[in-house]
Amino acid sequence: MSFQLTSKDIRLVDNHILVASCQGPEGWHDSTIDLDDFIGNTDGEFRTDIDRNFSHSAESVSLIIGQDKVTLLASLRKWDGSWNTAQILNLSEMISNNGGNLFLIDDYVGGP
Image 1 (cartoon, rainbow, N blue to C red):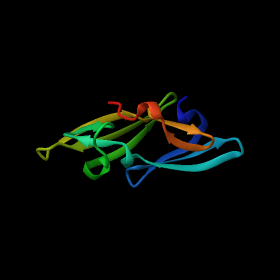
Image 2: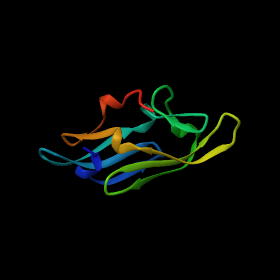
Image 3: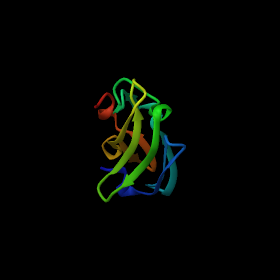
């Protein structure tokens, strides 16, 4: 289930910390997850299988919050120093709300 269906006030802090108020068994809880821990940048493209710390080589980082998904949008630096603009990554496929806390979905580790 997409975490945004049971979360509100979804936002990004410091270009890499996802923050949301998540519904749990005892009500709403503020929760955070550091996207730099599992998202990287390889030559201007988001990667979740080998790199980390995407925000160190990103600019114009933002979230697009839709009804069915939350998407990470950023310009990512390529190895030659140029920028690959408008790169997107569907965070709803990777992150869940588990009892009021944001968690990385285990099956997604090592995905595209």
